Length: 540
Image (cartoon, rainbow, N blue to C red; front, side, top):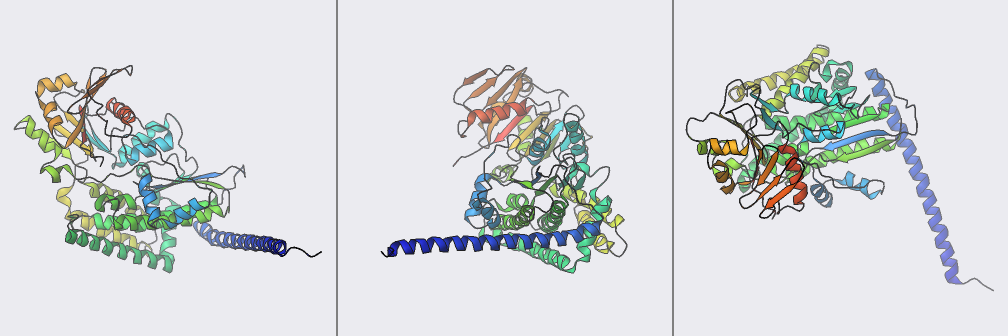
């Protein structure tokens, strides 16, 4: 009796599938072995040249930790970028099935220092915004200052150790207790990364590798002219009126090319060595998105470059050259399209307040866009001086030339320099960080209650609430916190008991109760303003 033809075809197809699967598995294993061999040889040479040693974990089964932070990248904007083909490596990681993507709440304030403090140390109390004012000492505080980051980390380390012990920190605000750090603000004083042997060695390897140097120079020139083209395009189309002055184009090249290439290289070396914990932050997307918008082509291009670095890191960690790793890719906060208060209303928030308070008011204010370049450039100069100091005279030529160019450009902006300590008295201090502003009245060095403010400046709070550019005003009265909009007020006492008059002030948000909890937490910080203001928000 002969076999059924359909049965023979089915068995043949099954055999063919098995053969294809076997060949595919063999090819994959062969490719993985060759890749591992290539990476092992490549980074063994680099580590040997740097005079470093490989780390042999005591527990071979305990994975190391790699955290890659893409500054300012929100969940929805990542999904949009994946759909538009701007993050092919991240998309490939998700398609493998061993990587998942989840939303998380960064909370208030939605800034990088607060997020990194929480992630690295499990605590971020005392950070009311990116910038604030110390009434008692009459000093402006901004997290671009290395001394502030150093002091705050020292306070955190007294409570608990960071997550990067014996690890590495690259381009962060805090080092999380890391042994090595590169462009990390909290470690810029009393020493910098490039004062160490390893920092100088990394730079030397870059300078001694012609292909890498040519690549970085090409990318830097391309980035500079791309920025110029995008600014011209924004003016021609009328979308944005971005100026051509200042240090931003140069700093964009530094963050989007030079910093990115160096930190990616450093992370790859660390993975080969088996460093137990690595935290690297890429700031290029956030820098560009702030200027051109989150949905802009410029922001998409910046993200694509970061995605390429993420792909390199992912491929090497999957090779398991020294140890297995847990890889986390995160965005520390999101970005919301917005319009500056001064452009919309013809004056800054501080100028509006000063006008309401009357003539003769001494105002101190720093808006979100002011003096950013100055802080970044001073930070950069410190590192460049350290590079130049530790390299041989011949190898230090490039570092010296870059430092001279930065110092020359900084001199052109000398009139715009901000004094780091506010020594003179101001009647009114306004510190804005995005849509969040802290307002301080220097009638007293203690925090003023709502009744004090109303007695000193009758009608001020009502006028602020009536302004279309101001959404919510937050004040204290004893142990109570009052969250107000034009038509309602939410009062919360020290026990958490709430009393609501009218609709919820945050009713237009998806989670109004969560929003009020975050605002309440900020308002109870001793560092918070006498008034805390939030700019108007249109959910549509």
